[in-house]
Image 1: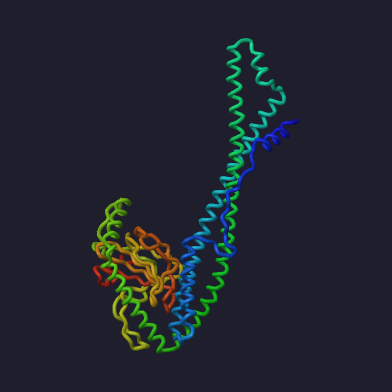
Image 2: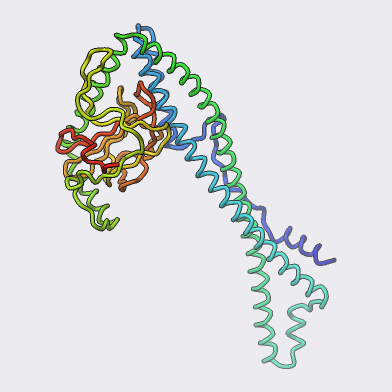
Length: 401
């Protein structure tokens, strides 16, 4: 029998069947399941159910536009999370492939070592253990040979165990890799379906928006809706200041600042004229009162509107705790950050939000991207600063460009 045949025989006898790790059942639909993604999907389904329940009543163009806008925001959020999940999966797959390659190399080395061992035994022949002991010239030599036999036996057992464990590791990692690849396929299919839906909704939104702008009364209502959104935002800020969890939130903020060892940090109140811009772009609407020449109406802008290309990164102007991530009709996706000392910053019309409520974020961290959610005049960032429940002019707090 040659060495390869002996090796194969050994593997058949010595290596038990490798148990593939149990793979949990996965639904037959296209959706990749995770707790965060399922929460977003449920939110989308609940919103669509509410739309269906009110579909019988007459809706204005503004109502329909706002419903479409909010639904688009929800689906964009899901798509963004799917993309992040896909990226994470790709990184995991690359790591697993590398680990499998390393394990296969280890297995090859072990197999060669065992083959050399079998070959040596085959060439030299092997006496039984009792023959080796009886052939000894003295009892001392017999004892040494007995110890030698035990070492050789232990070595064989160790080698065999290493081969079995390496094969099991390879099998387990391949099973995990297959699960990751299956998840990636599900993510890709769901992304494709959601993107097609999004394209159709965007076309519908553009039609409704064009109709809204043609209707003077409807457009006036849309501007009033913006003022309603400003009041809702003011209510949220007021509630945050009264919130019984405020003390715990500020304590967490101070703890994180100490942990981050922020050198030279000063209170927000001392940063007037020194804050970085949340996004690069041109201010298209300043803080304060504005008269609409077409509608002959006066509206109040509680912040500034910065025009920018859709998708441009929006950054926090200072460190703080994210208190609110929500959708406000008239403002769209909205993020509010508590910076302590009674100061808050607000970022609206954003998309692809990267932070969650109660997250600690540092100055210049990316928190979202420029979008047109809740906006009737294209992609832009609406940015506000609040201090002790008062609306402040952001231009006085941002660095001069």
